[in-house]
Length: 438
Image (cartoon, rainbow, N blue to C red; front, side):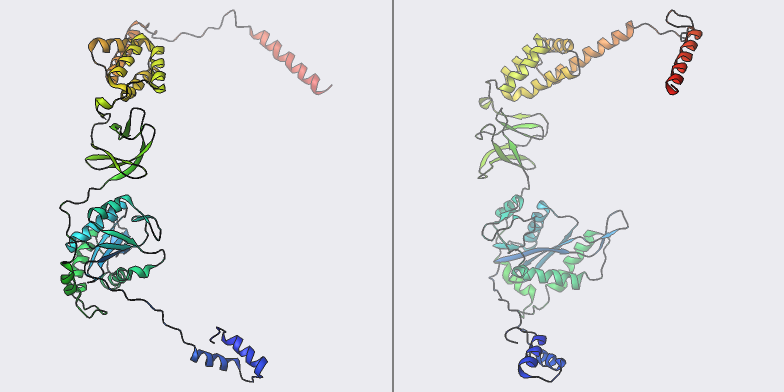
């Protein structure tokens, strides 16, 4: 048995080597009585107050989907302080990078402070790429942790015992608080969970510590890190190429990207009220701009504008010269005023040639320069007006169609007589018969 041999092998050896005359079931019962399984051992970890918080997702109770008769289980977020076992519980319909970070923020404000580090598993909302030594965190989550001065400590892959405290808290919530319950709204379930935590879960005597959870939390509360004065500013992160006008395009607006070089890729963080341009490799902050609401706005100081023509500039000007001398003159004037950042207006002017005749576009450019309005929108409006006026003139000069349709004629030099068509058909029929029966 110490060698790991089963009862069948032991019985066969006894019969072959010892001339055993008993039955197999006797050996089986004898082996079963002496076979013992060593219990699985776990190291019990101790933590200082305010040192660690463990977080994880579970499954909430069935909740009615608003406006329907369908029931669905939301996601149950649980954050547990490791020292006192005090927990924060919330259910949400959908999770994501920002929702995951917001739930952490709600937990810290519920506890009145943050722990020094947080233990989580390797779900995508928190960890983009698991690694034992240097895991890649979600950018929004990493920024939230930095804002609250908290360090993430992802557990090893397929090692849930590292965060066994929150695993037990989720099981306790599902088996005791939510088992067999249904809720009409997700707000109703959250209110019940908060009531249950305060009245029952926090007042219980913890089995291992032999102390009340709420009493341990009151002791731990003073050791939590103080919260910052402002909440986290959430953002979305995108990558952009620096255009030849030294700007990046965000929501149809241009923002200066220097010192990033033209043609390089940069990291752009889009906040509610500002734009941050960062180095793609080091994530060092390069530029900050106030976010604009009006599409087409250009945030680029005159000192940073590029006025030497590029290959794209020469292409646009050649297409403008094909339209007419006034269009070419206006495009050259716009480039001299705005530099490369004005090339989008030039593209708009030359692309009008796809829909309107060149002479109308050239005339509109001449009128725009005479009025002193150097704008693509103004040239487009003038072109549309000129085309509409020309169409109105054509409709006025067009002859009025007769009231009654003309009667079809039966006599004409090109119309042959019926006898000729009859002779033709008879000749073709005769030829067909001769070919069929030679």
